[in-house]
Amino acid sequence: MRLTIILLVTALAATLFSVTSFAPIPYSNKKDTLHNNLFTVGVGAALIGGLYDGNYPYRLLKQHGNFGLGAPDKLDGELVVFQGKVYQTQYTGKTFVVDDRNLTPFAMVNFFQPDKKITNGNSISKESLLHFLDSILTNVNGLYAIHISGKFSYIKTRAFPPVKAHDHTPLASMLHLQHFFEFNNVKGDLIGYRLPSFMDNTNISGYHFHYLSANKNAGGHIIDVKTDSITIEIDRLNSYTIHVPSGSEFEQFDFKKNREEDIKSVERGEKECEK
Image (cartoon, rainbow, N blue to C red; front, side, top):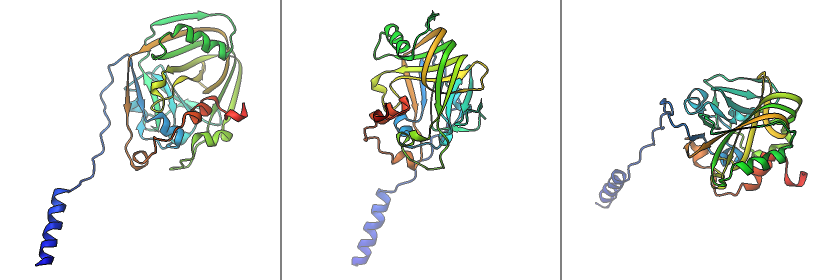
């Protein structure tokens, strides 16, 4: 009798608490019609913390924007989205249009429609350029997409080598693996954003630029720049969307850890003690 009762209770519990696996959320093939929206694949803190495996195809990323930047699958260099095409710069410096079937772990894009255009024929440093941008981007909590095109007397970029699948070494611990590239008297485009502090962790707050040469054969994450004659175009954004990845690695990722200093180090390309 006792065994019968135990079996009945067990069966009842199994019925009441029956759990089925969550079905994967399908990708949306619907083209984004929001022209002031920043669409982000993945979470910035997850990339900084070591989630490098791609999860979102480029063919769908382009449905949400024709301008932006990001990281390739397994951290194989740097990404630029410009005029509707996605370019990858590997750690060797090789730059090319990616296969639409490939995947990205993190990228941000928007449909670029500038609200403001400024020309500057003076030679200015990176620090002076950012100060100038601050003077015209007066909403400290605003979202801005920024396109800077023209001639540059000096540009320094970087790209990381690829990692193995499921290698989760934090990005700040791999700064010694960066490959740097220097260019003098070149033409090209800087594709970037200035995002507010409240978007830290989901994205990367502050300024973030990637470079693409005019002949589309060089690029990388901007470390340093000195302008010659440039045009600055600003697109003010008023909303953002995040595509949240699925999979156990993302589901178990520790977002409580403070990665503020790691983010700054990765953006700068060096540890604080190395400055």
